[in-house]
Image (tube, rainbow, N blue to C red; front, side, top):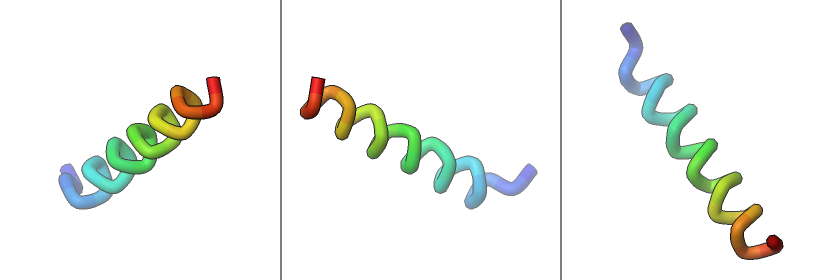
Length: 24
């Protein structure tokens, strides 16, 4: 498993989630 890619994916999802929360 490539943890670096998973970490990037999770971090990206968190950034999107935070952005939606701020806009929501």
